[in-house]
Length: 94
Image (cartoon, rainbow, N blue to C red):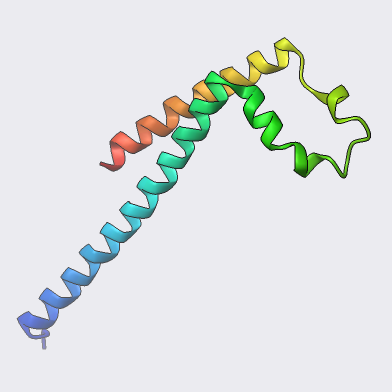
């Protein structure tokens, strides 16, 4: 015996609501990744400075561990890859 039409409609609606909630969370996470990737591409030194309090207990001379220009260039390249991937995923989510 099949369920009443109201029950099917309710379960279908709940599935759509769950899908919209998951989509909203995914969009928020992707937007966060896009912002972080943009910062990493434009000004990777800022992320290094923000990370300072987390590294302070583990290194003796924090300033001596700052990346070279080549290190910042690699950081920018990784940020560009993450930016492209995040924007692509956001477009596919929408």
